[in-house]
Amino acid sequence: MLVSVIIPAIRWDAHLDRALASIAAQDLPPGVRLEVAVALAEPTTAPVPTSVIDGEPVLVVNNPGGSIPVGLNRAVAATSGELVARVDSRCVLPPDYLARVVSGLADLTVGAVGGAALVLDRGFLGSAYAVAFNSPLLGPSRYRFSRASGPTDSSYLGAWRRETLAAVDGFDERLPRNQDNDLAERIQGRGLVVRYDADAVVGYVAGRSLRGTLRHHYSFGWWRMAQRNQGGQGLAPRHLAVVAAAATVVIGASVALARPRSRRRAVAAGAVAYGAAALGAWSTAARLRSARPDLDLAPLHPLGIAAAPALAAAADAGWALGLVRGRRAAGQAPPIHRQRDRQEESAPGRLRPDRPSPDAG
Image (cartoon, rainbow, N blue to C red):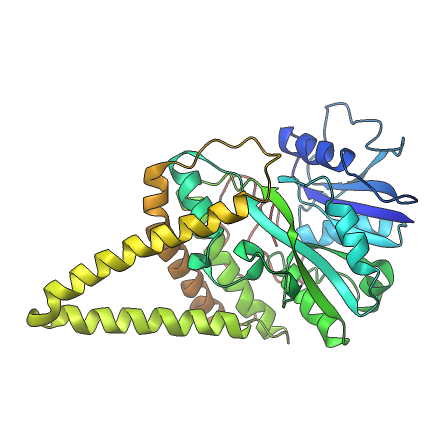
């Protein structure tokens, strides 16, 4: 069996080299071979590795627009494996990752298999984001923190049978964000299961500034509504639950603070709740971290752990603002952010994307 590994990337850099090394180190089942295609936005002058595994060459697919879904579709078209597995350029796979997705797709009722995303960033901001991301603070998506495998609405990265991708027409090239959620939705619409494998924990480097992080989550909210405006579900029940819970907290806190008699108790309760949130998020993130003992990671920054709820609140607010503005701007293009690792706009006639970073989905 041939498995096609497809990687969208901005440029050939140390992150991509590390991702390829983790692919080369895969412990594959007997009879399974790999081919790797990198959809590269920028030409490289660096020597391209001659092979990843079993002498198979790394195929470089030209993707000058830098659009992630376009690059993914081009990489799929350039390969021929029975199974297709997406890997991002800032990922570090566990040694059994591809073996696990091959096993998962052996069940013909399963249309997609994916795992968990473990944020590897450290330092103050990196630690804050790692704790916020790998906990329910940034929403109840299972791939961020859950240690229980099972059916889900969307999982991280993803692997599919080629025939399944063909049946749903691949990735929607109008969606530079949320194209993975949209694909999972269409696969489920064909009566197939999207499976989350909690033991397939993939290391992931975000590498964004504070401003970039907030814009990143804002664009996810905007493109959620774009997905909805294009006929998709857009918002899953878990998203609505987050919005409802946040609104309840904000309204309750505002009412309590507006009353002089309850103000002191409200501040005290808020401080206790904040501390509990930071502690709970750290515990959840540490549990996921324990699933990758092969990674030599520095300890989380203590102040970063403490700042995680505040960062999550800001990112969630940005996401909610994106939802509101995306709903108002139905059919229009989102604002273009000048960020590191942003790409050229998509072809005329399509929704103009918020230029994607190399990790995204």
